Length: 245
Image (cartoon, rainbow, N blue to C red; front, side):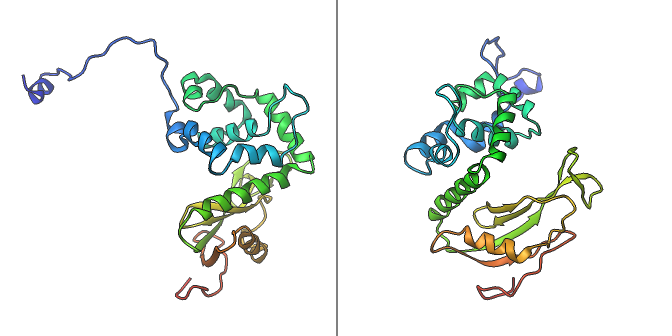
């Protein structure tokens, strides 16, 4: 019997059998990150990101404590999957197949993650150390990129928050409004400025552009600014590359 005739008669061209293999509900987290191969490459021959995170952050207080990379990398994974609170880390930890795919042996508890984040904000090496990690990542990515001149897209994004210190945004909800600088060609964030929700996007525009330029490695530069298309576009000067900005 031909396949088309089988389909017309409702006969499916495959069999369904029972299996005790665990399913992966969040397989999409593995595809864009390819974490097992990526972590191995980053650790040995390329960016060495886990080592850089651990070097730039305070060392664990004991031999049993987690290193900083054990917090940073799962946090990135959780946020990439749409998580909004630390308790969402439990859903990733419950995905045993995903843990195997990503070659993650263990995840810190959400309370442990919260304690680490608070220490990070209080320690003199915390946020500045993460800034150096970003600079290292930007340098390594752009070093492997063929272009030498890039377009910059600057935009503010609203993060809704129920914190007491959160301010009202133009969307009539309380939260924060960080400013982000994206390199258009490699789709790479080079800098950010975490701001209260009531701070206009164009505030401190020149200072932020200078920050983005300082993040560029030697031999690479930002030559054009893509004008914003939201309610508060940033003003830009004529292109340094020739042609209109």
